[in-house]
Image (tube, rainbow, N blue to C red; front, side, top):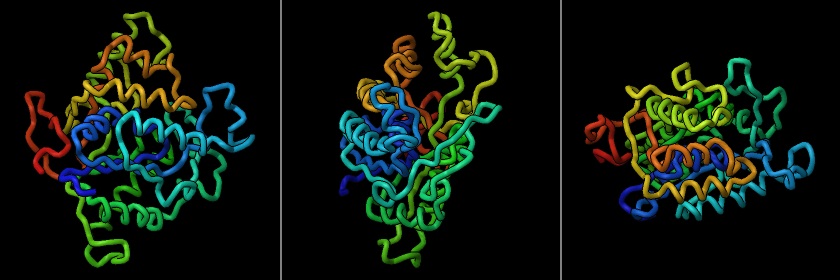
Length: 302
């Protein structure tokens, strides 16, 4: 990849990228910046929302991973992203599955496959990513926070792998067979603005929608994945590319329904609901900020 500015995103399952940073990815791809997506599993344990495809479930034909691979390809086409890889190659790591804790966040499933990503050797998994970092040489890396947004064990592992790999990749004497050392200048954690989320929820409830994001009160406590605004470092306005994001979300049909909360929010709140994406800075220096105190570009200051 020879473009001057290069972004690397590390996600756990197909669809995570489109939900979290789809608009940013589409914006940067359209601007000719380098966008590379690394997906750590094929999402084999995901819930299937298409009745005709229920036979693909893990406990039946176990074909969901291959199907979601095709969905991901369609989503990347919608976003204009041409560089996508599975960590270690397709099928190396398997979706670990999850269950819901009584407190409302995800936790590990009672039983996991031997190839489950959550069980992966950290150094081995990180080395797969070190090779990609040293090949692509991104200035910016995006992944999850230490809790994986909502506690999913694969999201937490993706955070660990991305963080460790970025550190290892910068060491000149480490694994010379994986390429020349490269230090990622800025690392961000995807985030959701608390003020935006409260305003969006309020608009949904006023529109009569009481089921989307069920249990979330515009004026009450919000889940961990919602970030207080004072912790945000960047807000990328990609509203011109929100249609591409929605097309990418629609491509993940086994996981996201057209009458689900993402589309309800878009319909009731408008493009700004999903067209502006927020980030916390985990490594690097804050660049130029706007009147809102946030960077408008992840490459600010580089």
